[in-house]
Amino acid sequence: MQYSIPDYYKEFHCIAGQCEETCCAGWQIMIDKKSLKKYIHTKSPYRWTLLRGIDFLHGAFRQKKEKRCFFLNENNLCNLYSNLGESALCKTCKNYPRHIEEFEDVREITLSVSCPEAARILLSKTEPVRFLTYEKPGTEEYDNFDPFLYSMLLDCREEMYHILQDRSLSLWTRTVLILGMTHDIQTRIDQENVFDCQNVITRYQNPGAAKKAASIHFGEAAFSFQHSMLKSLHRLEVLNEHWPNLLLETEAILYLNGTGHYKEACRAFLNNKVMIQLEQLLVYFISTYFCGAVYDGEVLAKAQMSAICTGQIFDLWLARYIENGNVISEEEKIELLYRYSREIEHSDENLKIIEKIMVGHKVPWL
Image (cartoon, rainbow, N blue to C red; front, top):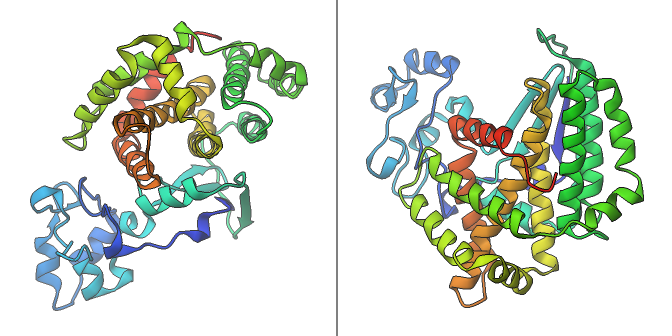
């Protein structure tokens, strides 16, 4: 079994009670079946408190007011952990903020930026991300898993990393390139001509592809598309009651005064540091979701989702920057990033809706 992790993975350590936004509040924490069985049969004196804190009908920990986990104390520490130790934690609590994508004989592990500390690590990283692999004993077989398609997706993703981390190009040009490449690959997949996908990847390695992409500018069509994608977030399940107001404020600040106002604000806000942070976010979303296309063939939708999610986070930052009088702190960027991630990445239904939107709305310059 092969495992893949980003090079900053081992930098993460939970800061527990010092965290500004605990992961033990705000959403329902689901319990895996193995842990539920273990909790039912525990012999500890803590047993009755443990059982009172579990909703066995829904397989989740009960919540107190403000959606705080039953076991989260006033110091933002876990009473279950304090009384029964780390081994008593369920799979969700042990793994978070680690996000695992599963493929045949492969596990790809990332750190979810819904965690403030993981977000802080990613946004502070200045060097291009590298992905490390290691192996452990074990093999497996998945029914209906297409190893040839998966291999092509790996090659495509590797080229996307190369493009996205080429800092001699503008971030807009890099984004146009990866979307153009995945558009052409999607066409081959739809035509059941996967064998020609390698030729597409090779074509986008040609300097001429970058030159053509650089000639495409962010114009009225792209502005309208970005605006429509921000508005589409109102269609999603709301996990935090303040989220809809944040979206409305962002839209009012950025999109009610036309393309020229938006582009002028972008020019004032964008600097080398912000460009690197946006690059890291694009790589993060691509690394997390792109190869999932092996299960549904939606290559372009996943690339578009990565670009749009990054663009929406940028919009949240830009609106806060304008609102503050052309200044934004790193802590504010981190806060807006993990708030966005919690709304989008912590709801399977929201992820499905966004991808469905991407399937139905091709970016206008392709």
